[in-house]
Length: 595
Image 1 (cartoon, rainbow, N blue to C red):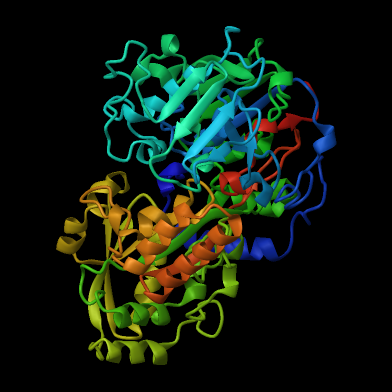
Image 2: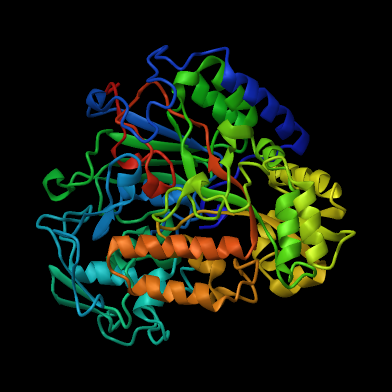
């Protein structure tokens, strides 16, 4: 999951970010609101991995979201932003989905349209589901197994419906033989051979090769049903046809969106959704400070994007409204990565020299400090992914003895890589991410002490796939260090690390394996992982993969990222979920009053 999956904030200068980081540390350590329940707020971190005010949720009222960015698409096939996946459960259902529980339990799978989780046979290659009784579309017609199949088939129509995750396409049709429903020559446009629908209540998936995360892929929004007669193709995102408790009432892209109750949804058919509010609205803003002020004023309830308040907003909130804030760990690791195509980073000792030479406390401060930035990152597996060890696994003592840098060890590594006097290189950062510029400046200052001279090249963040995502361009530009971040599409080492570390995912454009890792051991561990069906075995392999990545010194992790997110006094039954990378789980939010 790239940072594209969650929306960015308004542009601001690196200097301002640094000033706010200092203010933030002061505000977080004392003064202002003590985090207690003032003005009806639940208290600081009251909804972080636990449910706040569950018993106070009432039926009725309007839940009000705000955001500085619209979804990439509200089409269940095309959406890839994290907040879209979260919000879309109001109007879309899947065979299985994430549990509506706080913390780690929220990343587990539970039945939704299906009566149970899959019946898995044929050594993990066949998955069978039965649909529940009473599941209907917004016009009252039954949702059938063919609707589910058709919705999944739309993933193959990348020429019309590009942008969303393609895991299902890759797993169900690895040879790319099916051409998608719009080019399907079968009369019913249901010609994908790997999915069978023997009757309207039964759907069977036949995987050419076993993949132990297949249910995780089905739980993504791209696994939603779509009814053929309501498929408006590229326009579907303007008004998706609802299979959930809410339906689109109005939508003006970039301005506002309103959902109202779907009268044909039956609570008895849906074990997941409580459907507390009568209506749900989103208002889109062009300025993050305006959005945060509206949140603080009580005009809005939740920030849709869930990427933390702006520096100005969070400083005010920490001082005066701390009880309205939660500080969850996100699913993201922020890091520097070293492309091996750019000398001298083809030598692991030169890579290790940079890891030891960096000032990790300074890097953490540049990213917002321990509260808004996160704990110092010591390895590359996010805490939300099974197999993660957090700061317990710290092979370079990044959060320990070397947290402020170790010049002596760095110079030892420079000598070992044949560059005893150091070298020059370029750091690539997105120009619309001031925090990345501040991070690069921290590295620049620290590395100068070991003789590594760094230039900073700010590129157009909107052009990321063709700039740092092009290995030939990276080599041409001499980008020895790239600053980036990544979070899981689903909480597993496959859902996080496959595009980063597997040699098969090195692409000419849109590449995310920036380090150009071609390690047969790592590739083999991923192959073993997808064939392993027991959780303990999968967790063990995930840990091994992370260790191999860190042993190669391909990355310098900065932080296990944290956010400061706002919840209004009105909101009840609110909690953060690992299933949505530390966001609030939107689907069962309620209000204390129906007003």
